[in-house]
Length: 272
Image (cartoon, helix red, strand yellow):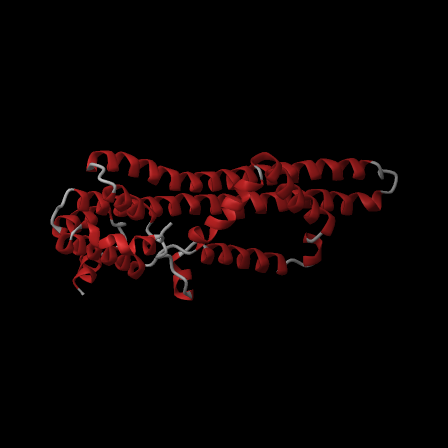
């Protein structure tokens, strides 16, 4: 995966984290404005819905998939900034110019340092082995798909959790209704019992629709961004293999940049 992901607080403004935090603030203020905010909190209901969602999701998808999600989730919350993308483009064009000027063997001593550019590293390794660009292109397509598959696996975990949480909320409501019906001889307990029963549905809806579903959509966008960055690396390796002039690579890069990125600014960084 690319190492050009932001590590600074300024990147938060570009990610999904502000939206999630804003939703949490709106929800908190709404509950706080209620006459008795404590009515919206029940420890047993929270434990049932949150704990049940985690355990059922883990049982459905497996622990390995959850590890993949934990690894990739920061990429959904903290997407790359324009300067990060420009830096990546600059590095790719610099490598292309170096191989054009000094030959393909010039990158062999520094190949290990390109671990943050896995597709480019793989492509250069194949070219150094003497593979033709056509075969390299097919292998790099597989390499890109292999990296993107991790995002799809992470999306599956969040989609599963988004379905499980509301279902557990409804299940908890049914359990609460059974308990409520068991005390019909004491009418003063019916109202509070119904309130607690409905809280599980409330918590399930929050987890499913306000947390897991938005995070899944954020991962979809992160996968699309990652695919563009990986394709940039693949195009760089193929351009080097075809011994094209770096200026042709710069033109191809411009077509693969995200729409929110200024191509002139990104390609201008390669001249420095």
